Amino acid sequence: MSSVFNDAIASFLHPIRDLLEDESVSEIMINGPKEIFIEKGGLVFKSENTFPDEEALISAMRSVAQSVGRTIDEDNPRLDARLPNGSRIHVVLPPMARNGTTVAIRKFSKDELTLKDLISFGSLSQTAARFLDVCVHLGRNIVVSGGTGSGKTTMLNVLGGRIPKTQRLIIIEDAAELQIHADHVVQFETRKHDPSRGIEGVTIRDLVVSAMRLRPDRIIVGEVRSDEALDLIQVMNTGHDGSMGTVHANNPVEACTRLETLCLMGETKIPPDAIRKMVGSAMQLVVQCSRYHDGGRRTSHISEVLGVDKYGDYICRDIFRWVQRGKDPETGKFIGEMVPCNYVPSFFEEIMVNQLPFPKSNFIAPEWAIKLFNA
Ligand SMILES: Nc1ncnc2c1ncn2[C@@H]1O[C@H](COP(=O)(O)OP(=O)(O)OP(=O)(O)O)[C@@H](O)[C@H]1O
Ligand SMILES: [Mg+2]
View 1 (spheres, rainbow, N blue to C red):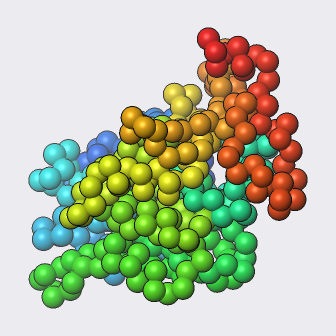
View 2 (spheres, helix red, strand yellow):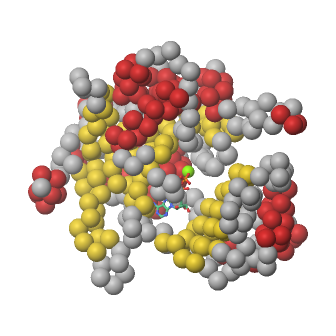
């Protein structure tokens, strides 16, 4: 642990040292000093570990905050930070946190995940992974959608890693999380408004505006959760093809409506109907991440957005879908596979023109799946 934290912090964090070091633990959730839960293999378990008391827990969090140049105290009762080893930490102090100091530490796997890893985890089929690669290569705008902890950031990281190395990427995030290795990457992080220290806030919105003036080939917004949605949509509609972002939604259509709602949160004079059309044309591909009850994180849908119909509804067509076919009686793990949905995307010609090795037959659904879709 000393490689992650200095010795002083390591001693404060001693009560959870084994959890921090255990690579099979992906998340540590502390609900006050005496209640610690962990996530392992996608499932949540109660841990035996505890902190001696509230003071010990707060001291540990104070020292963690200090180590990343931040403060957590009565005036700043929340901390959102990235630890030196890449883990993400969020802390809320009492009295807002009724259970006592509440913490979540999200650990990322040591090795950066790739498309191949997602295939080996069963999160993605080989064909679907190749299709995503084709889409990134062709510069389709991609929105990764999913619930909390469903694997959105991981997916965005993997997709970002497939962007042709010569392109200039501008990455914008609230807390820097993405680690996209390319030759030409500019990474921006927002700054919190802190009137007590005379610090002006810099929002994702501000940074998207700056990014537009910095000759980007592609703009990536780590998480779209406010009125910057409108800027991202405009970026996507104004020739910065291949831009990407993540949004919190449970299915591809909901991803569209969520972005629309976020666009309308800002002070905009653009009428809602026009915004809906803008969202419909900006979003080209939705990659839906889902966390299933067996603990598995899978790509449940890869869908194309084709705009809005005459009733104002988003037109969304599934290209690939994960279909459950059973359950392993011993492990309880879901058995299933990702299948094509018999839909050839509107940009298939582009795939052919660019001579990308992705034949039309890859979109044909197997017989059993067609029966299931029609049932
Ligand atoms: N396909 C996958 N298979 C197994 N584990 C995964 C997969 N994708 C992500 N994970 C793990 O799941 C955890 C959550 O992933 P990630 O941070 O990408 O989710 P998220 O949707 O961005 O979460 P949040 O909503 O909190 O931002 C991480 O520990 C990550 O390593
Ligand atoms: Mg995330």
